[in-house]
Length: 459
Image (cartoon, rainbow, N blue to C red; front, side, top):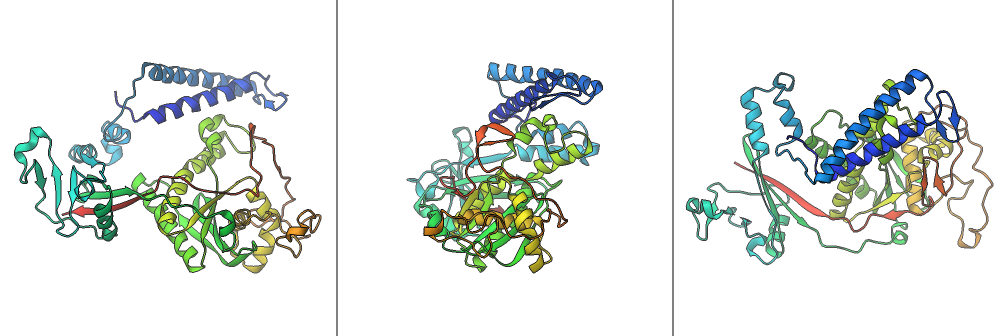
């Protein structure tokens, strides 16, 4: 059986199917065209009948997933499910049978060896010498007759070197464990050697220390990053920055490369302005991704608009961006601050978009949202205060002004809109069982596994 579902994917599939089944059953319990409490029934009988059919399909899929989980059998496709399915339709994939076979064998052909700290050059199975530039592999017993070095080892005849950060690989091999991965790229007819290791745990600076220096706030969106540098008093400095992040239709390797390129640009901007941290939102879109088109609310769920919205949500790499940002900033000595994402866009449009656009015409609602993110990371309120950015300690119990200044309110695209209401705490409307954090309490990303990852190719 060919499948690309790993154990974690099986659990996610079951959880998603259960969420969708519960959502449909909740709507089917209400007559068509009516509403009972917060549950709204389907608009028409025809739509209700489609929901019943959809419920039967989802229950059948859930039953199959439960049977697989109960049997403890997980099907794994070495080489990837997408490439395996392409074999049945080579014309649509644009591949000849020989090309497909070459890619399939290359995907399934790899060698990985975890490092050992007490071994020579940090790895017993795969060894790379930084001075002499040779690579040795310890062969299994059945292949011992192919060894050209003592103790059943085989040394490649070509030199192997890291053109990027090779000095760091050499330092790690001399002092600790190094993991090596050898992979093949049939398109370029090359073999690649990747080196990775775990970085030492360094205490993260406190939020009080980080609040004394400027920071770079970034708002992750579909297709781009909106960023702005904020001073310790919560005011934006300089001009807003837009970093392209086009990921639609790209393979996983290229998507990861573009995410890393965008993060590199953020790090360079933070360095130029003397920032000590980068602030982002703690986004996950877990509900929208698990319930899919069955999710209803203030976002479109059906038809063309619903498909477009789900495509946008699926295309925003929230987890990958957060993990890559944590790794890369750690290597550069920068911290990452995550803040509550609740109502950043609404408060940005209500309090910041119009005055910021008066100073800089290229400002968008996403840049204004980045300002709100940065203010929360600094510990300030999201809304603007008349003439005051932060009250003195003795005056914090008294509000400087009852409301924000009477500036015109603009929406995310710059048009005029009425002020939005906001939810200040307690249970979220879309998650009644979850309590949100106060918006002034930011968190620093800590205790994440950090690893260097260096690549080279073998001629």
